[in-house]
Length: 188
Picture 1 (cartoon, rainbow, N blue to C red):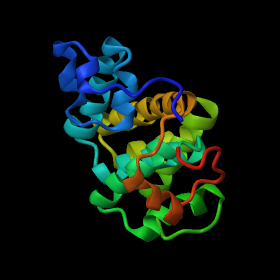
Picture 2 (picture 1 turned 30 degrees about the horizontal axis):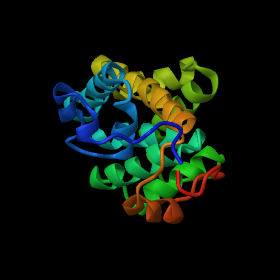
Picture 3 (picture 1 turned 45 degrees about the horizontal axis):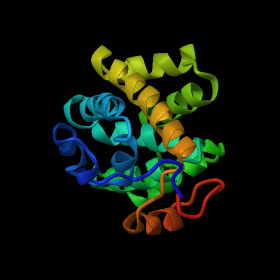
């Protein structure tokens, strides 16, 4: 159960109600701080809708962050987004395998993206070796957007975990099919 109330449109000032056009639990919780919710949504909106970074690579990075941080809300939602972006079931399973150091069929670039997400999540750094691999394959703009995505979704995952935001019913089956390393809460 979430640690803050889930608000509805009628709980908000009229000027803030548009933030709940999509009444997902994440937004229903964050609108307890309308200004904070707006800032969060601006950053997320850029990364999801305006960045030129390949969406498949972006989703691999986000999923790696969610997997490492055992963030069921972020992970489950981005499993669905990742599938829509072209990630296969094998790709999604490969995240856990690559994290554990097992061989996968992922490309060198995919593995470099996962390494970057792991390094930045675990160590708050990006090694020269991983950066060089990414730099050889991505434009400077894409590289910056990848780092921004990893950073943003580290913060988002930690926020969702701290507030114990519940995973909505339509996403729970994804957590069963692609489980986290360990689940601290059954529903989110």
